[in-house]
Length: 93
Image 1 (cartoon, rainbow, N blue to C red):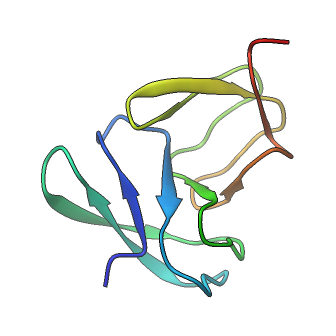
Image 2: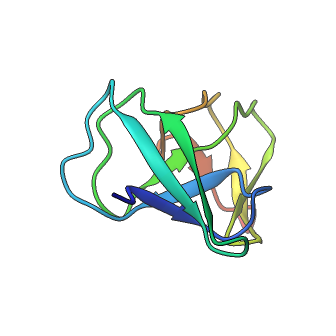
């Protein structure tokens, strides 16, 4: 079962594509550009459509989703944690 997707293995976040993701699960992530899967530990409950961190990110790091810069980290995010508006902000403002 595919739990989350990302385009490039260099993406720093993946998008959760199923309901009911819970902390402690091992998730299967599909890397679309390479048509392969990897596993990632999940360290938080994550709603469908939200992001999971694929690597540790520090305050100020750029967040890459689907190969595109989507913002900056404003609170440290660990691998497998929920990545959303509480720890990522746009660079526009």
